[in-house]
Length: 231
Image 1 (cartoon, rainbow, N blue to C red):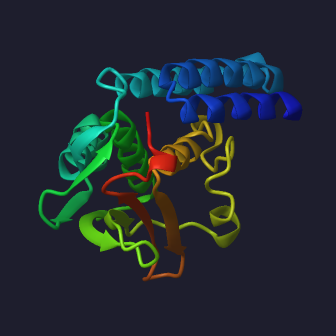
Image 2 (image 1 turned 90 degrees about the vertical axis):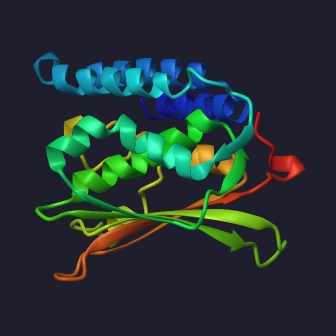
């Protein structure tokens, strides 16, 4: 089973790098569902499958627009990710604070960036308790090595935080702390998308009482280098 899982991951990476989003989603989720059928008794599988199919349907929606890199407003993409999660926001009712440093543009595939931001926002909301706050920041940045302009997107929350042991594995494929409701693919896919766009994603977290919370930081080049160009 482990070897088969690695085959699925290898195929998914290939599809991401070749810009084949439909293939990666359809293939990975269907085969992963098959693994769940082997691993879990039939009576306990209905809810995980429902979650998988719902995630698949939502993710496919991110790719109904262009799959060609275009100049895109990071602010607009982040706002549209909030719209995607509107029903969840109404249920959890977090306070969302925005701090955008102007209308910043990058060359990217809009649907893929939206998937990244929606995943980070969804995870933040899952971690929140009463009086939860999510801070969204978009700012200009410059690479200290290449001096190339970049855009930094920060998603910070005051949720329960992530334990150090979990933090080390958070971007691994098929790793989840959400039990039957998690697929273990969200943050891994997000990291692969960011890497494909020539960017980076980092996370830091604290679990101490009164100081707990998690901060995800996504850094994207304004223009990808030729050897990391998407599409």
